[in-house]
Amino acid sequence: MYLSVLPVSYFSSIVSGKKSIRDWAEEGAALELDAIDISVLFLKERDRSSLLAFRRDVESAGISICGASTYPDFTHPDPDERKRQTEQFRRDLEALREVGTRIVRITAGQGHPGMTRKEGVSRALEGILGSVDKAENLSLQLVFENHAQPGVWEFPDFDFPTDIFLELADRLKDTPVNIQFDTANPIAYGDDPFNVLGPVIRRVAVVHASDTKEKGRLVPSVIGKGLVPFPALFRRLKESGYDGWISIEEASGTGPAGVKAAVEFIRTCWESIP
View 1 (cartoon, rainbow, N blue to C red):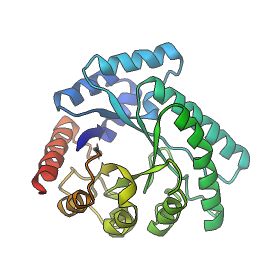
View 2 (tube, rainbow, N blue to C red):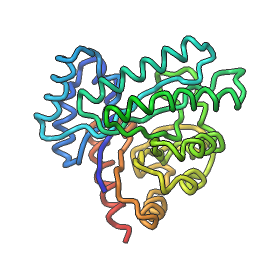
View 3 (cartoon, helix red, strand yellow):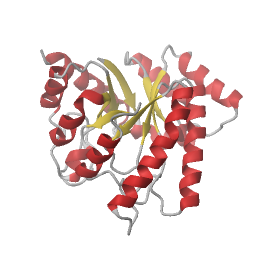
View 4 (cartoon, one colour):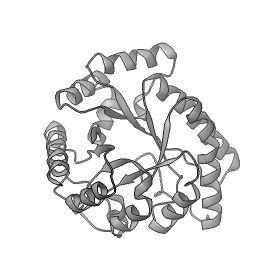
């Protein structure tokens, strides 16, 4: 198993500049992570010299970047905006490659009011598949997540309902796009995470280890203190032969103590499963 952390609790401080990417990289290295994760929102300056400086700040701490979260809205009702979203995502891929990213989380888009399921599926697939060639040319792995709603969106993800996510995942099964399985989002929708994991388990490239305090609503918890049945999920993953990346989505807002506790919990939990 390889371990990384997406520091959602630090997003605002990193984006505002209060916490530097080097600060986050050094913290990740001190926790002996295999890599750190970032959000595309961290890349405020996109010229090549700034991107290379960003990469140097990470690697000088003795660590690298594994995954990056992005937020393309491929389901937008305006076709011109959908085209812009695709073009922006392709530029995001270029920037993420420059800073040393290996895996990129891709989303379907928002569940815009008035959009039919057929329209949403068609738009999401068009956007995702329209990005595959760019990712392959850059040697980036795209992973499609059972997603909820980031702070930068107005509406929940179109694929937040389990059946829609599984339909899109099935339509992508013969493509280079793999799966990023989020542990908390099914519970936040009011579902059982095993209903999501089972059909896609052989295609999981990243496990997003997140937690929630409530069923039917995403209320981030210190990892291991919420409702996610981590031991049972990890057992199922190990039984399937999974030994890849676990990216801890740390969003508890409890600072370095919460990040450290999450890393210790996930390591111990995974290692305790025979």
